[in-house]
Image (cartoon, rainbow, N blue to C red; front, top):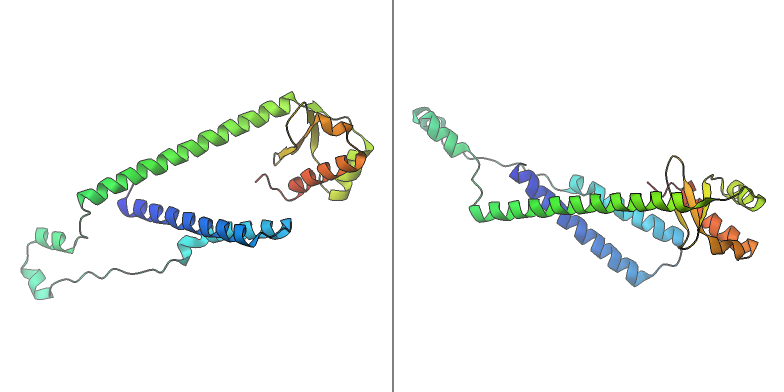
Length: 199
């Protein structure tokens, strides 16, 4: 990896960390109760993080060369050396290498964590029992205008996942609750499906 690219990647990571930290602090201090406002706020913060590289001020580097008469009398090797960019000190190169390894380790950790999460969701889906079709489920799906496969599991909490074929996992104990509570819970999960939150 080119050293300048790695330095830029480290700087971008630091900027994203700072933006998210300030955003989270601001969200904690303001404490907005409206879920829709929080949803838009965090999406806007994500968009800001994604466009950060394009918001940077571009600077062009001007290399001062000796007068043309001096260049004509200089050997080619010395011209190449004098016009080349300054070399990175050894200490900075070690820091860049360490940062590269840390970034690589972070990426591998995130990939492993995501893979384990997907594996657990697959097991959860297989353990769940497909809900029989009922009027309550059809009514809520028609109201929200979102369709999903509904399954019940013995424990846990409501979960929604999947993009092409969304699945809503509901705890078995929900069946013993009143129809109003069942509607509210299912409606909440189906809104995740409708908004494509899984992406």
